[in-house]
Length: 218
Image 1 (tube, one colour):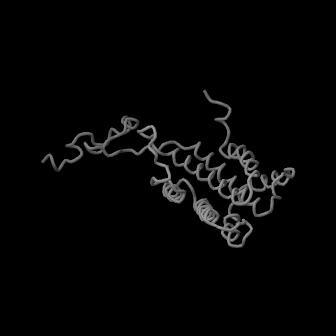
Image 2: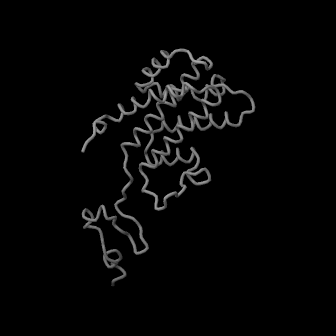
């Protein structure tokens, strides 16, 4: 039976989640804001990829563990782009955040998002992200929040929080719209096989070795 949520548009679902994400990010400052923000984006990107992958045959296959092929955010970005799950703008944003996270994680000094070396890295990404209608809405929400015990929310941190919020909300909303990829045929040790879910629609595909390799039957 359809639930009320099933009738909601993906953009509406993303907008609902975005406000919560933005307010949670307000609790972070400095290096913590960068590391926590990128970690949230990394997790959302992982959910996006998991949405199109076949279920693991083992309970814990560890595909996304740090020492595995998809353990890094860089590898996830490349795969998501090659699968057509994200566009060039999102790819640029994710790579910029990856480099920012690395810079902050390995900096011996107190780094700031307002430092020219960091602000310049994100400037072009912000221009792209501001095209999202949620940017202006969330900016108003953040501006309306009362002062906290943390340091003031400067422009650099506010823009960063808005970028993280939009990426996480829309990556998660997109993942909810996807299903595992279903190739029309798969390779088996016995040859090219038709998955059961396509058997009835694949009657025109060869099903015997003679059909598959007629030259061998001569």
